[in-house]
Image (cartoon, rainbow, N blue to C red; front, side, top):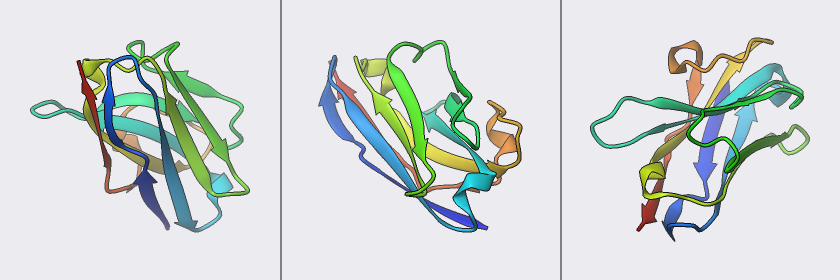
Amino acid sequence: QVQLVESGGGLVQAGGSLTLSCAASGRSFSIYAMGWFRQAPGKEREFVSVISRSGGSTYYADSVKGRFTISRDNAKNTVYLQMNSLKSEDTAVYYCAAKEGLVVPATPDRYNYWGQGTQVTVSS
């Protein structure tokens, strides 16, 4: 098992930047594909970005492509989400998720482990 703890959320003005971190503990971090998902009030949880175990493959939702960057440091057991040019529609609770294996799916139900979430609020 792995435990995930997100941090770095907060209130930011439109056009600003935030970096989210997700620290993992438990089993070897490098066996997990990692993802960031978000959920706005009244909406379903949606895919933001995912990264493969080695960090060599990354995927992004169209809505964040070119603005967000996912990365991981396996030595520090941490995955990051750098968010630039933030928009009001990026406001949501952001969740970190993990699953074992090579496949890096974009659907939340494929992930076994979840953090508690961190709130990101973008004011316009």
